[in-house]
Image 1 (cartoon, rainbow, N blue to C red):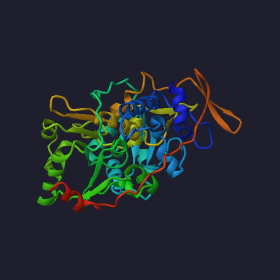
Image 2: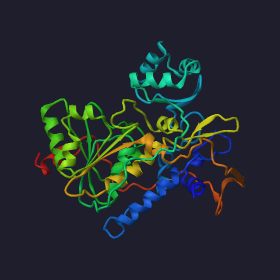
Image 3: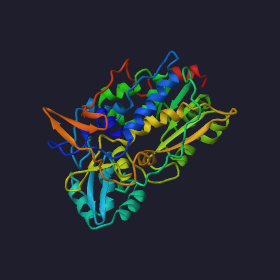
Image 4: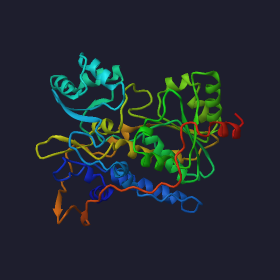
Length: 405
């Protein structure tokens, strides 16, 4: 079903060069997302808050808000590039305000406003392994495009439980973690979004409709871990939470006074979402992580192009939601170490070539030939948000008072 699921997801329409035929992504990420969403629906169907979403369509949902389309070796969002190295290809992101300075440190030069010509020239004569090593040292989101190894995700969900009324402390940002929290909210969980004054969710600067979709109906608190009061409030919030979602390395959490293992011992489900695992220093965002794991399509010349829009993010968010709904066993919770790169790699086979099914034009549109017959290539589509997204710290006093913090 992978070809049909890809066609219906909206991702095919976002894959390939602008003005050219869309391309089929490799692997079965759309099928995995559909199946996980079906399991979420089955787990919640007899509750007051059934979760009914099209899992495959979630993968292209952000682009439906932004209206952006496929751009070949430039990501849909525009912040990431696929560039040739001395021995292959690499994905390099420039998404944060400090990234131009870090890229300058990478190439050893002060860069102009357009950083890409100098970065491309530096990469062209260096192997991908050198990029990976230097990116890890500098904190850059960049990775060589690897051949998929057919990895198996190590985290498997436990027995699902109703989450209506459970308290979710969401320390994450951008897309993967917030999508996980959003799906739990649809299932009736009480979601509290936690931000710090030093680091608000960067997605607030993105499309407001998309941000509203993911955060509508949640509570928002602003806590400062630089103060003893802020650290105490964070710790007390975690102690009250049934489910914790975060996207930080353990060392950063320790500075906040947060102890994942202690939370697990008292029965909490802890979902840790990172680019490459909790103990890996390499960072990454949705586009470079997906490409680095091998999720790229290739045009007729063999040039890699991005598949969809930051695909590692929504795919991981859906998978993480199923993990978060796991029931504690014997009074003990569970820590799920969710590496986005591993989630992506698990959907790929042993080859990085695109599937054999071509995308062909029929009339004014495109179709994919699946085993069940031709399937029209759908445009990205989004759901309607219900309610408003809270501003930073909008409910801090209310939440802390209600929790007795």
